[in-house]
Length: 107
Image (tube, rainbow, N blue to C red; front, side, top):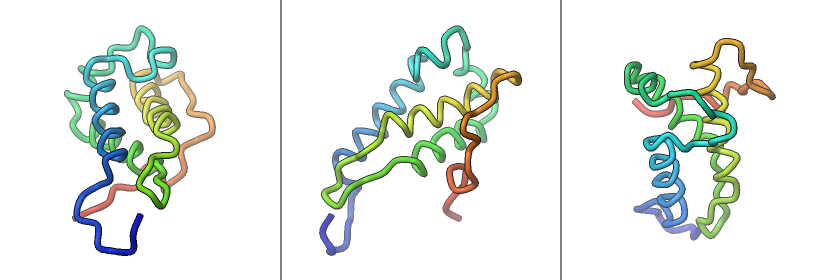
């Protein structure tokens, strides 16, 4: 990205968030990992879980100097792993989520 002040997220980043929200909302986020788990009701019942899913996605997402996303699939997978662990107590996230992946930013 340019050194100038960025006033909007790059288009690729906005698209990554849009697709993440779409997959999350329609129940197709990482179909293999979350197969048979109705996580949507759980995320809506506990707003902080939805907040954490987005935080993990945003924290893991990498963007290059041109504003292109580098790992949106990995970011989706890490969020999906966290969701699976919340819905399936027997599931272990591998590798375990690092503190920076679950950090909540903002006021």
